[in-house]
Length: 608
Image (tube, rainbow, N blue to C red; front, side, top):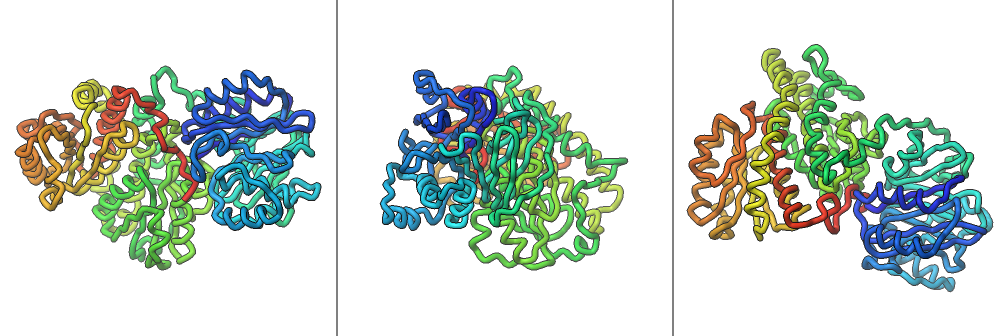
């Protein structure tokens, strides 16, 4: 959520800031602004809406300078408008602040500052930071920011410029991602790598409660005691083209098309001589054999991957698995001990709810494992072990290839765990690995038939309400299909377990209601066909997703059938989700929506 860019150097700062913010549009926002320092004065320009509105205002102001900060805001405190947009100025106009996150004690701080004579013009929590830094400022900007960090509670990434310091700016973070880009005679800050990849591949990843002073020729990192911190440089090994559309109309379609390669990137380095070798995973055999329970914590799409993971792990490893929405896990006083393992799943590795839930599990003694895409992210750094998905940049807000690669990582984990616990014989283990390696080509086969999905979407993009039903892993798959459709088409959609229909939901089925039904498990095929007959009798229109060998039987009850290759049913979710993603994509395109940047949503959710 929100995006931060900062620059100091020899370039004209305005195009650097605007260009960087454009690379962060995928994070979600509803307003944007910049603060530029020149001749010891701070000029702020901001606008509600897309960056085009900000660019229009900037074109008439002709701001010049070589130091500045920029921001795209996703509203949390106060409606999206020009006043609530960032950056925010202190009362005396000498300090400007951009901020990602939420300040939890901002009302108490606001009351305190109001009592000291400070006046507020916005409804935001961020303006409190600007005024508090001014209050704490006694000629040393770095110290003022440190003191302010000691006063505020919550999550934040900050960029701060001060008119008394034309040769530098200050940044800080706690529980919200921030990186420092290292250039020659220029340096940067940003919420994410794509914002600065055009200029540098060398970065520092800031840790919690660290403050950084940035000049054109140097970067200094401090803890809150004022002690200097030495940090290794992280070199980004993917290029800017990975974060570009590459000829596709939308990032989402590009990323769906990249699923075979992304899954291969997740699997190939971990399968050597037909054995699973997990890097950065050092759990002792004794712990695995004595493990009593696995917890999976995640949000949104990653949560749905976790639900599939529960079925996979329990089936293969025969160990109880509990899946929690991360935002609920932390507050329900979970029963955790040191014989449990907790898997945290997050595309960005910065999802705040998931990070906090993982910390809670770790505090209670659980060993923690991260399944994330972003190297060096907060969740990756704090977990005991990490399985990187290696999916590459995912820019579209609606996650696609990240979900598939999260499932691929869960398959690797489950097979490795089951083998170490003695639950898989060698023949079965080898067969599963062989099937894993076929997944990229099986998804290629689905993508080659995308016109079938497109045609069905064309006939049904005006649906008012859509239901997804499935059983067992197909129910978990339905949850993700339903979310994808909701996210980008804005059509009301719900997922239900097939057996639950007659317990209430079937009352909502009427003539013409669209129902999407995955049927990928042979042992549940007849049960699902019976469920389909029940809703067909009430007038529903059925789109079924099934394996080629079951196409004939399913075609007898469905209005349209999309097939996936025949495979062991435990691997079907990673392949069968692709036509669901395509369906959501085509419906959104036909409705004229902004596919990559759906309303009200953000790519990286860094607030609770």
